[in-house]
Amino acid sequence: MELYELGVKAAQEGLAKGDFTSTDIVRSIIDRVHSANQAVGAYLTFDEEGALALAEANPKAVPVAIKDLINVAGQPCTCGSKILKGYVSPYDATVVKNLKANGFIPAGRVNMDEFAMGSSTENSALGVTRNPFDLSRVPGGSSGGSAAAVGGNLCIAALGTDTGGSIRQPASFCNCVGIKPSYGRVSRFGVTAFASSLDQVGPMAKSVEDAAIVLKALAGHDEMDGTTPRDPVPDYVAMLDGASLKGVKIGLPKEYFDVAGLDPEVKRVTDEAVKRCAAAGAELVEVSLPHTEYAMAVYYIIAPAEASANLARFDGVRYGHRSEKASDVLSLYMKSRAEGFGAEVKRRIIMGTYVLSSGYYDAYYGRAQKVRTLIKRDFDEVFSKVDALLTPCAPTPAFKLGELQDPLTMYLNDLFTIPSALAGVCAASVPSGATSSGLPVGVQFICGGFEEAKLLQVCKAFEEATGAVTCRLAF
Amino acid sequence: MKIDVAYVSNLARLELTDEEKAIFQPQLEGIVKYVEKISEVNVDGIEPMMHGRPLVNAFREDVVRPSLDREAALRNAPARVGDEFLLPKIVEGAES
Image (cartoon, rainbow over all chains, first blue to last red; front, side, top):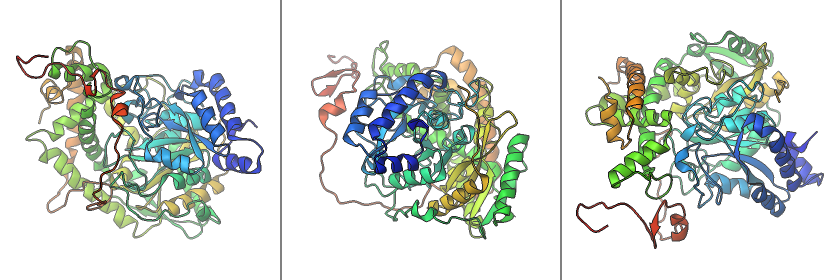
């Protein structure tokens, strides 16, 4: 077994025993990147000297690949955009500080849809990322580079971010475990903002236990992010001991199963997951989240609105691309943004500006926030009856590069991940099976706000009931 | 309600080519039409949800602390002069 194949737990054990050092792991990953990244395109950049220097200084640390919108001092942070070409981060994001303080080091920057807007990583302006199990298909997105690196064994674990499904959908496409923590559980300081009321950083890993170890390192209060409460962080790892589905009440929301466009193979894998849960002793009950059908519409008002405000900072003045064709300050803004942003980012800025503009605010943004309250209440109500929800994660397996051209069709990928993001609860994608052609399919578990310990226990027990999901790498 | 992409992109300080306008206009009309689905929902008396978690007033001590070093803040500047960001002339008739 090569060291790059290790998960977090196995790496930590080997490091503790002295079987190998952090430098050995980093070297193994670098070799793997040299041989495989050209095919997969998971990494945008890999500062080999920097990673090796960190490993030398921290011989027991586990390297983690970082999505390219999380700031690491001295490293690029392009957000998959031309507008941040050449940018060098002046400081570490809090999640990076937390990683370093807990036995991890950042190693490599992985690709993503530009500013995390997309579900296939095809919106990256800086490179193509391919699904490691079928190179003609997408890895999902927006954390597609993270998922491809984990699924393709180009890293030990990775950080992703999830605004409407950007950790969970690519995790499902690339056979990894992805956790979207509850809103506020993990600091957003130093993470380039897309939609500030939704964004969360989370782990993408090779097992539930690995994800728990990384989440434990990430989570907690940060005085630089006022939305992180002081609630203590439970020992997510210790709490996995003896995790069982026996007597666990799992809700099956009917709105997630009776859906046009749900791929029959995804439906089969999900139905099999339900049966495994039942066989493992879980109590399965049909439940309803009646406002589910409005979640996509609410999201595509709120997320672009917040994005349009957040991306106003890219004006060619303090950092980022500056147009050389500008004659005055106004044209500097107009042209720098026109030259720097890609099509999807432009669409969302325009959409967001529209729904916030005078005369339309109440009908769109104001109303969307009220419907969001109703969506949140659906989840509050259902979690008074069940411990967790089980749903499909994405409506289809990984699709072909270039297959989805219409923006609205692409948005439908996040049908099952958006409602829980709006409600601010925690959710995960866990490998569950494969299609007849060998593409991985994950299922989604959702628990209430700040119920990560319960979520991870359910996922761990499900993982044990499922056994290893083996898909053949395509390179 | 109909979105006017040319008008809104100007509000967003985003210059679009004629080609982009022609592509985005129908795409955004479709997205706007889709999101108008929320007009079906009765929201009488419902409070808006601003955030993923209800938190009010996260205070910290009001003390001066070191902030980003000036040189570090200027390092990514597209153009600078001394300790300042350099911009094209803003005021009509002023010396640039």
